[in-house]
Image (cartoon, rainbow, N blue to C red; front, side, top):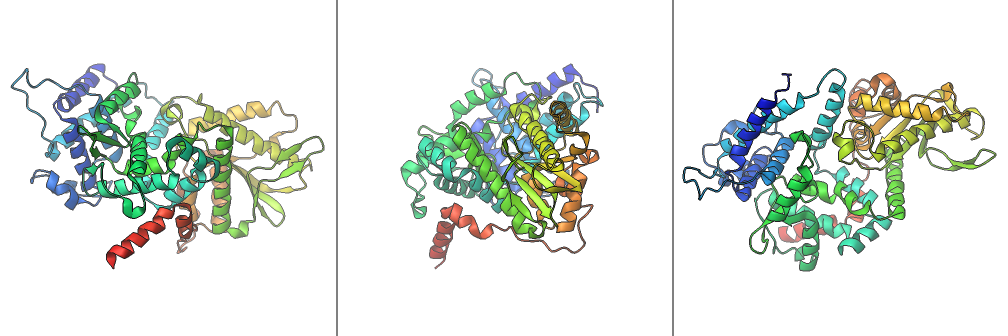
Length: 520
């Protein structure tokens, strides 16, 4: 990578700004929408909004194609558009507005953005920071690469946030249920995948959704254009790296235009799905201790049920109390017990990553403290087993794992090393924890676990968990490690909760009924 050059950074900043300052926000957001549609299998939807001569090479869903427009770069570009001041064309007749149907205009802006990001990425990059940069890149890209529109995303998020205390808090705060919010979001996504505008006064009564419910959902999914510009300018100010500035589209994935905010646009409709699934976290996280305890317990339950359904032979057990003679303790959240011995102990953590954890340079954010505590809890449990305080024995090759709802420590070997060092320092203060109890600990994200369990056998999963817990594999992705142990010709298993989705989200069943009626 070239050495950082401040003058070149300024050059590419100005080059990008020179295009965006002549672009109508509404028109250019539609251009971003069209580019996204072209590369999401929806050329027929995008073509009417583009000049006839767009390069056919860009009609691809292949991320390896040299013509691919990365979704995360489109997201950054939309945010930069909202923070760029416009030039007054009435004062200079030589200025021409950037046309909103020309795909080359979008490609030129993306090229300028990419060169700007490359310049910024080179600042402070060296052998000691490269791995932290890899983690930031992963946090920016991996969710887009996995995609948002899938049954596990809907089921997992609703299981964790859409029941019990979380569901009650959400409805009390916003005046609609999680189910209704999800249904409206899906309807908007479906419409905006084939049309650049969702009309505010669309009729969803066939799904039992009222006008008032739609307005309540719009407050969470959309903001007026000028309000979004102010929010983007505030949220993204003062952060050096353009690529890692907060995206206001994560909070409000659509933007409304018109005198009555009647035209709702989402340059990347996929983010509507993200907002009505995992994004519900941000509606419930401030609900108090009872709400946070509820989604933590439900995440733990989801992980246990999934493991039991996929690999029942590994003897999965839920958390339970034991008495060590002086006080009551809880076992780790999930245990794997075969032939009377514990082979794997898992702590589940439902904390979501904030901006600092996702793109910061250190582990000061509160969520990392949860990971440190989880490691110490696992070591303390192994110590209690060795001391005969639990009534259980541990196999000689047993390991621990911290299973996270968000992508903590993915592709982040240096940060894992820091977490383990902090845990070791804390364990030094506990005389019961000896070196033999400090077993290897792996860090696993739930989406990687789900992907792994599609083809894992009991033997391949056990070997993979032992491998990822080895410090040599810290920072690796579980599903990638599993490739080394996957058994040949192992048939893929279906997502075990597919048939239960209609119970958690009744609108899914309602939608099937509406489709059947219209078909008839």
